Amino acid sequence: MSATISPLAPKKYPKMPDIEGVRIATAEAGIKYKNRTDLLAMVFDAGTTVAGVFTKSKCPSAPVDFCRQNLGQGKARVLVVNSGNANAFTGSKGRASTAMTGEAAAKAAGCTPDEVFLASTGVIGEPLDAGKFSHLLAGLVKDGRPDLWAEAAKAIMTTDTYPKLATATVKLGDADVIINGIAKGAGMIAPDMATMLSFIATDAPIAAPVLQDLLSRGTAKTFNAVTVDSDTSTSDTLLMFATGTASRRGAPDITDAGDARLGAFRRALGKVLKSLALQVVRDGEGARKQVEVTVTGAKSARSAKRIALSIANSPLVKTAVAGEDANWGRVVMAIGKAGEPADRDLLSIWFGDIRLAHEGERDAAYSEEATSAYMKRDEIRIRADIGIGRGKATVWTCDLTKEYVAINGDYRS
Image (cartoon, rainbow, N blue to C red; front, side, top):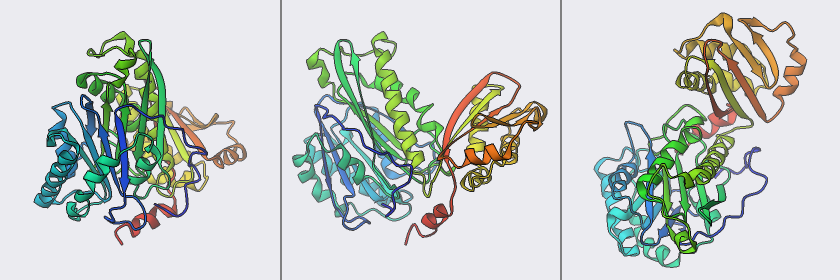
C-alpha cells in the first residue's frame, strides 16, 4: 500500500450491508508485507452457487488453474485470498501450494476441496509458501463475521492506495436482495475478462449457470473496458457467489437466464461492476487523471473498442494527458495504428466538448486557451468519430506519470 493515497480516491466509502450466509475474516500472515493484513477468508453457507471469469493470459497463475477446475461444480463454501505473492510461474511448487491451501481450507470449513476457491496477487515467479498461512485458516473460518467488507478489501491490496468497495440493493420479485463487491488492482491492468482480483457476493437465489451468464455479460462494458498500462495480469480473477438466503424472505429462485425478473438485478450488478472497475482505473499507479475514451462512427462495435483501447493504451496519449497537453495528433496516431478501418479525411476529435479536429484537419474554431483550461481537470473525456459506420465503444484509463515508473522500477525490492 502506497504512503500517498491517489488524488482520485473516493471521498467516502459506501456502508456495506451484511449479506446473510457470508462471513469474513482477515489476518497478518507476513507473506511480503509487515504490519498489515494480507490474508482473507470468506466463508459461505452450504448451498452457495458460484460463477467466475478469469484471465485469458496464456501464463495463468496456479490459483487461476485451481479455480477453473472447481468452477464446473458450481458450488462454493470458502474463498481464500493472499496478497504479496501471485503464485504465478511457480510450476509444480505452485500446484503443491494451491493443493495444500485447498486441503487446509476445506478441512477448516468442513467441505470438500472442490468447494474452495483461491486467489493470489503480488510478485510473479516467487514460490508461495502455503505453510506461512495454511495453519491460520481454521481460526479465520471460525472467527468470520458478516460486517468486515472494508477489512476484506484492505487485505487484498498490493500497490493499491485505497480499498475498493461497491454495493447495491435491488428488488428480486418482491424481496430486497443485496449485491456487495470488492476489488484490487492498480498496475498490470488491461483485463482480458476482469480486473486483477474482484469478489462479488449476493443473497439472491440464483443457479450457477444463470450467475455465470450474468457475470460474463456484465464484464464486457465494465472490467473489460478499463486499462491502466495495457498489461494483462496472469492472475485476473472475478468470482461471484450467491448464497440464496434471500429466498427465506420470498425472493424467487432464478434458474433461467432469460427470466424477466432478473432485469433490475442485472442492471444493479452492472453498476457494481462498473463502480469497481472505475475505482481500479482511478487508482492506476501514479495516476492523477481519469480518462474516458469514446469512439463513435466505427465500422462495428468491436472495431470501435479496439480503436478506443489503442488510444487508451498509448503511452504518448497518456503522457500528454499527464502533462495537460491537448495533443490530438497523438490520438490521430493511435487511431491510425489500431489496425481497424478508418478514413483520415473523415476523422473528428473532441477533448470534452471542444472539437479539435474535423474532417481530417484542425478545427477552424479551435482555441488553445480553452482546451488548455480543460486539460487541467482531473477527469478528461476524449472522443473520436471515425466517420465510416455506426460502431461505438467507451473505455476508461488514467494518465501516465513519472510515479508509475518509480513504483514499477523497484516493485520486487
